[in-house]
Image 1 (cartoon, rainbow, N blue to C red):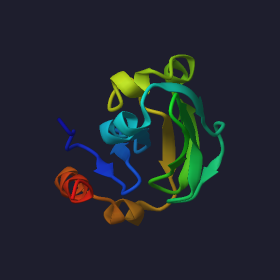
Image 2: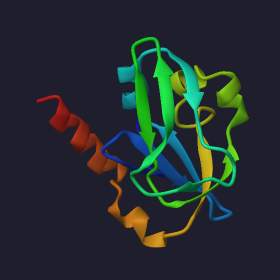
Image 3: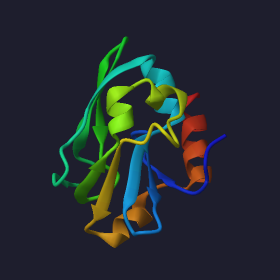
Image 4: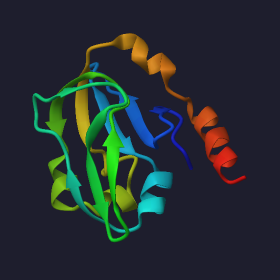
Length: 129
């Protein structure tokens, strides 16, 4: 089931607003399913500046290496050390324990350009045809 408490990108990342105003970022179930078993994540360091829809990092799976794109602009304030130590969490629990980074957003309006869960489901259905 796709969580409806976050926004989604066409590149299969998600972003969820936290109570403190920061944004959690991760990859979707669809992304991890397409990648296969994830074995390594290359993520930015705390303090790194992100630009919306530019490369945030890379995910390496048994099948390939793929870019991860930032859904929003802002500053990385936390890296999920658990997923760095156990990258397979992005496969097994991409929406909770498998989150990647926490970002302090610099542009509030960027969230408006992202898809809702329902829009993302429609987008995924369009890929199947």
